[in-house]
Length: 280
Image: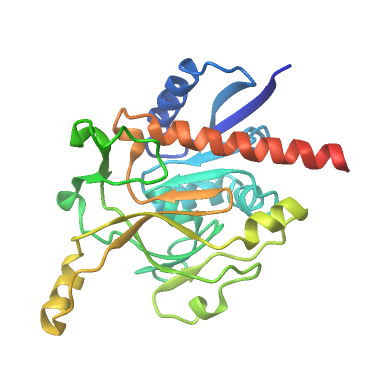
């Protein structure tokens, strides 16, 4: 007997269609049919309520939050991620929305969903014209062996007005009060997880899943020239329990490896939820 799992992709703005195409590619290659997958575009609270997991795509985070608020979807999104703690992945703008704190943001200019105890720096690498690609080392992926072509051992990261994780914050069930006091910083409102599994996911520390060495924003470059500090690695992927965020755009690559990895993470959570239900 198979379990039906519905994965939604927030479709208010951004590259939602590209995510769905890669998810469908992963499922076509599956050899064990423990799960039946449905992939849907999410624009309403009713569509969100049908989902077991969610992707928030790249795009423009301010626009997404404004449209979500006006369509009555912002609060259900916060409940989905922070009360029910269902598996969620945000790419670029999605990472910003899932962060508990975002700087370079005027108060009232950006609503956050939250779910990842991190502070992000928006548009860290600069404007659209300063977008770039980089070969990424992603240890969490099952990459080819080192004996193969080196280009196949890496993942093509596409960075478009990308954020970075500026700071990993301590896990907190409440609002990140210390962040709220900072200038030009917004924080996500707190929510109470509904059950023990959700609390467990929320209490987990943030894991750094990938970094990008050797790049800095122009503002940081100017500061480092005067201080003499070496360039530090930028955090570009993080996970906290079953909430995952990437600075870059896997949906624009045609490479389904991260989507395949993430669906395995969704399976793990569904199994845990099923086991918990059997015990209760």
